[in-house]
Amino acid sequence: MSSLRTGLLVLLIGLSGCGVYTPYGAQTGGAQTFSVAYFTPVAPLAGPEVGQRFTEALKDLIQRQSTLRWVPDDGEIQYSGRIVGYDVSTSAVAGGQEVASQNRLTMQVQLRYVHTRDPDLDFERTFSRFADFPATSDLFDVEQELVEEINEQLTQEVFNASLGNW
Image (cartoon, rainbow, N blue to C red; front, side):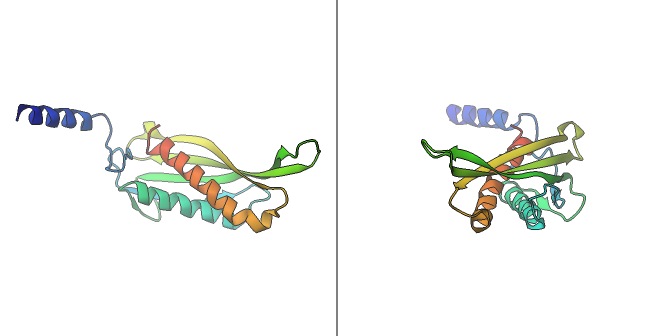
């Protein structure tokens, strides 16, 4: 019985650290709602669907990995920003040749995070991720798949930086 009490005491002490955490590991700081503004693409190669897909991917990830409730405007936690980079470059050259064997799609998101309950947590930061594809493929044929892969990485990094408190 004594070891049970000791175990419960250790558990309670561990749970009483600074910040308010959800069962999913998100540090919400007591906030209950969040909002995500449309991420406007300002990069020349990024179409409006790139901004829409990133915005929705971020909203979906936060809903899945936290107990925060989405509201259309003015959440206690607010995400906004724009797509500032969307570029294709060569990432690998075929051995002994001067021909690209792999291309890379890189996406950069400039993000503003506002925590209305704890302004000390606010930040502005640029996040960047990429996905490679064969040089023999046309970007338009693989773009949707690449953007989905990049969005998974970017949104997880944004979540970790904001709610994961990494």
